[in-house]
Length: 422
Image (tube, rainbow, N blue to C red):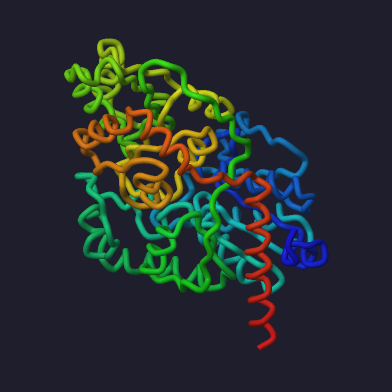
């Protein structure tokens, strides 16, 4: 343990509260999984840490807190203002009441449900070091933080009032300008920001945040790797995750149709799709099920328990991440690496940062099934597979992630003490 995370240094940032917009027992999104992994890592290091989650009133019966160190703040989802990301003042009061006494560090992992008012309220407390972990682009983009245009679903490279009203004509340029300013004003009292990717840092700096207040800490995984050798037979390419409109599964389906018509590939390739269908129109679902039944190279396994993901990935040779939005630091990439599997991904955003083309995986052009087929064909080779496996980086576990967060908390705490002394 370094000096910056030694027992002598730790007390000035404890107790610590990790605040998440949801709980893993309710939702399996990347932000809540990351927040809970950090909480688990800090707990394993014997830190004085509490996990506080938002929970909608209708989800009370589904919530399953895992320890006495976990708390919930209940709310009515219908009362949240999604455009301004604002909750009712009563929720801010409830969050403050849920904080352990003498809390010294608060780490938000999302603005959803609690809202920017809660972030600002706690950040203005001179006794608390307040840090926001950025997992997405929701502060910048009203379209679920996806930076994808509506209705065409093209990549958006800069959110400006003029561009945003093309996606949301029900709002004015002035309203989008005021929205941005409200976010920046709420973030000004924060002591620092943590991002799991340099890509996300660059986007927020271009938007208006000070680069000196941002630091990068990769997401860790709650479980260790279970690397297994591949079995003889066809090369297996697996998709894992939610099957929603932004995850690019349609690109996989079109690639599977093309592969089925190529005698040189159809017998050597198998594509497995694992995941729950969310927000997809009925024609897409019907097509997915029909192709899985009729194409020998394609299968659909449906939803899976996240505890089984490494075992399922070990049954594949590659993991495919065909997202049609930027992504920031997809947990599925870290999981693939933990399972010892190279990744074939869309070569944009956080995916291109986490998967080095030709080193730990292969890139293909966004929404281009022909280029995906080409990448699959190149990947279906023992020498290529061996080379890419050798390039897979080591994945952090929850303890390693927690140590890096403690270092960041201490750094932000030191900056706060210095500013108070001036």
